[in-house]
Length: 80
Image 1 (tube, helix red, strand yellow):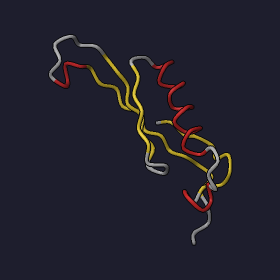
Image 2 (cartoon, rainbow, N blue to C red; image 1 turned 45 degrees about the vertical axis):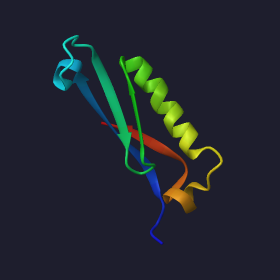
Image 3 (cartoon, rainbow, N blue to C red; image 1 turned 90 degrees about the vertical axis):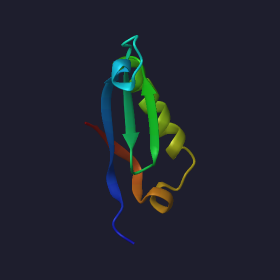
């Protein structure tokens, strides 16, 4: 097995509903993390940060992170 990673990489993308064919133009953010195979979205940056925290907490809580995700316990989070 490889050495456990110490970092979760979360990718954030910004969209407007117009991009999706919705004429309201309501913007939203989508965050995804390949290491834990999780996605969340929110209409504001602040709400997205809360949902990212919840997404990571829910995914890692009670898990043997090294065994399940090949991550150290309490990895750092990098958002791009």
